[in-house]
Length: 381
Ligand SMILES: [Mg+2]
Image (cartoon, rainbow, N blue to C red; front, side):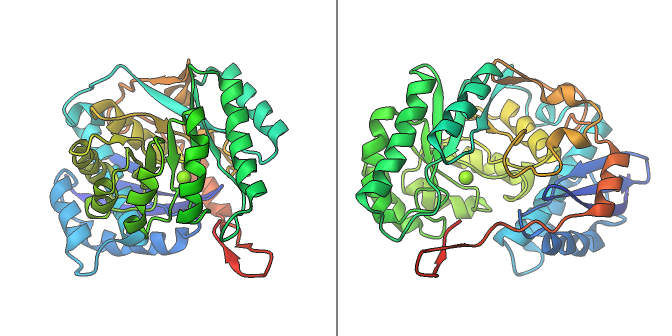
C-alpha cells in the first residue's frame, strides 16, 4: 500500500482536518490544528506530505521519526500539530487495513467505557448554576470551568474572593459525589496561584489546570506545594521532553492534546512517562471529531487514563459543532457521563466527506481574542 494524496480542509468553527489517501482505496483522517494558527499548520502538513507521498502508510513509527526529527528543527506547536494530525490519519489507515479499532492495535482495551467531562462557560454565578444544571441533566458527572476571566498582575482581595466564590458555588451544586475541574488558563501569576489554590482546596477540585504558564515549569514546584489541589497541565506542551519538567515538578494530571502533541504515537509515550510519577492522563480536546476519536482510542488503551475533555456545545463552537462532520453521531453518545467503546476499524468515526468539503469552501479565520489590562497592557487570554 502506498500513500497517493494528502489533502487538508479548513472547517468552522476553528479546525483543520487532513485526509490521507492510498492506492488501495483505504483513506485515513486526522486533525492537525493549533487553534488560531490553522494556516501555518496547514502549510506544515503539506511540507511533510512531500516526504510521505509514495510511501507505505503502515510504517507509522518510521514516518513519525522522520517527520519529528528528520528536519533538524523540531518541536513547537506548528510542526508538532502537523505531525499529530498526520499520525492520527496513519493510525486510522492502519486500523482500517488490519480491520481493527486503533485501541486494539495499541494492545487492546483496558476499560469498557471512558468518562468524559463537559465545559461550563459563563462568568456570572447565575450562568454557572444554569450551565451545571444542564450538564447534570444530560448525565455528566464532571464539569470544568474557567477559574476567572481576565486577571491583573496581582489580584485584589475582591478578585481572589470572586474566584473562590465561583468554585464554592459550583461545588455546592455538584455535591460531593461529582467532579469539578478548574482551568486557570495561565491567567493568574504564580504568586496568585499560590494564594488561590489553598483557598479553593476545601472544595476539592479534581484538578487545577494551568495555574502557571506552560513556559514556566520552574515555578510549578512552588504552586504544587502550596496546596493539596492536584495540579494539571499540558495542552501547550508538545512532546515527552516538554512534559518532563512538569512531571518532575509534581503535577498530578498531564493533558497532552492529541492534535498538538505528536498524535496517538507520542501521547501514548507521554502517558507511559507520566506513570513514573503516578500522574494521570486527561487529554485536552476542545476540538473536532477526529481529535476526540483519537483521544478516545488512546483512553481505551491506556491504564493511567483519568478523564476525557470534549467540545460538544463548547462556547467556542460558534457556527459549527463536532457532530456536524460525522456520518454517525452515535459514536459520541454520552450515557451517564461515559462514552462506550468504538468497535469500528481505525479511529472509529466515519467522516461526512461531503460536509467537510462544503465547509472548507467557507473556511474560517478563527483567532482568540486579545485581552488587555486596565492600563492597556496585554493580558493573558
Ligand atoms: Mg485548558
